[in-house]
Length: 174
Length: 174
Image (cartoon, rainbow over all chains, first blue to last red; front, side):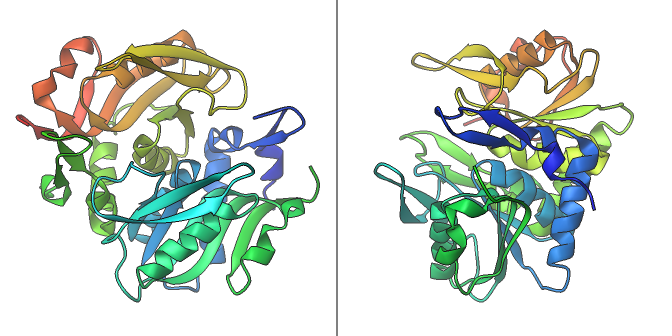
């Protein structure tokens, strides 16, 4: 199997002291690694009928856009507040200190569509939970949530009970 | 020819009164339109040897990532300050009021590589000029700058003399 983990750079003390940041730019900056990543993500959902791929701003756009293109379906962005110009709905989520929110265009998904939600990293799970809510409020069926990297030690999966969650690379400790 | 313009939504008074915002989410949300967009962008640079595709945060990521994937080359993000975790260089550019800057990882491009810079929209040209400088400071050869939409009436092309600039859709007035 392709060594995805070997293409991810660990950046110590980013964004703050004591945190080891999983930098995926080294993976996407390698043409072969990018190809292998998409091949594997596609394979995981090869038996599903996906009508649209939702990407979470901004690194999620990279993988979600390519998957949408490959499947010939629409790409739907979920963005920070105030970025999407037309009518939106919003969901907030908790941060370590305070909260933030995400938005989706109300007409981006049609009732009953099967959607795949894609992001680069599953950490505490706040953004993905908010995104599943946004999709479902628009009547979508969330087929799954797909990540390049999952930080297992943060335990986000317990917030995603009932959803199919797939990650290519797992880190079991910080 | 595919009607790219017909897939772009005009949102009046966004982000402020009197501005008509060109919303590309309606285009990328349409699987066929996304395919046609990439086909056309690929065709424009079919005779060039591209070693890496640079995408400007965040909507530029959508098209740049797909092109990099299609060509089997690396995708390189240019981002707002503080987002890229490893060592970066920075270029500032003028806004209507004040200034902002963009960053690139110093090891994202190798000396002598041919790069294509991709963004969704060419408006005043501040971000694309900053991005050409970032790429060239790392020793890249900028093969061209590719946009989905160009706002001709803002005259950004005169800041890009000597560069090949390609846009799929032109708006000649506000």
